[in-house]
Length: 309
Image (cartoon, rainbow, N blue to C red; front, side):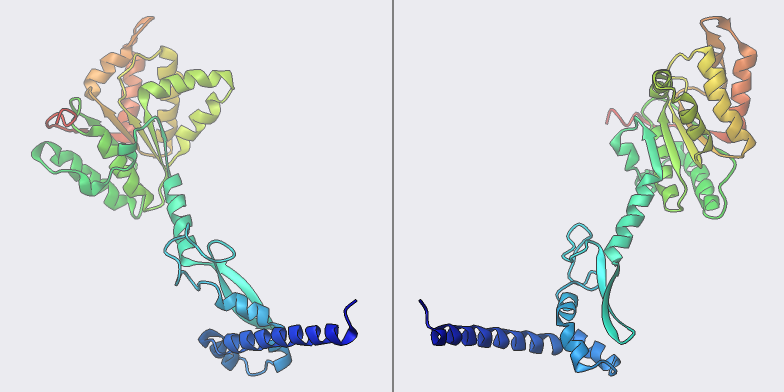
């Protein structure tokens, strides 16, 4: 059995070692520039209060302050990802609080902007399109001029009309939509991009879960609606009148712009929309075309087939 003297000697050695480590840590904490500045600003703090909160002070100095030691939000080194510590004095006591850091705020803004663009079946390269990457040539001059006019006005007030971009296959019509959508998100304007053939199938499939009206309402009310490749697929009279017609009627009444792309001119599209399984319905097709004219301006795009290059 170990003697009392031996046990006491070990305890004293251990206690002395602990005291030595404590004193060293205390010295390091209190000599840290951030802590010296904090204590200098609060001379009312007692030594007892300071010593009582050494752990809080150590927690503060061991973390990055407003991203000073972090390269990105995902690589944040702090205890709470994306939050920067703050030392405060409340009622004579030291408190540590946390606020969102610069990287966290930037991450939230980026996520919010990305969420402003929603799409149905649009390829990745279209969702990443930018205005700066659009090449200027004579065949694109009208489209570029109209897009510039639209975006300039959108900074202060969303224009009532979008664009009906018509042109041959492969000249970059869809790319224009993506570029405009990405620019609009910088103005915090939401965009819904729809690939028309898949949109038709999406609506048909929505009958299975009774979500048709919910989806149609979203297309009606989004800030900017973009319909890619209208006329590419034979539509039923019901879809033309009850879905497309309903969406365009609402947006026309609310002065909300729509962008379209099509291989058809408006005159040619009218012929396509009139042809149904039940026969030729010129009046109803004409009604759709008039609504398209109310929410967009026809713009012609020419050039080489860029998908072959």
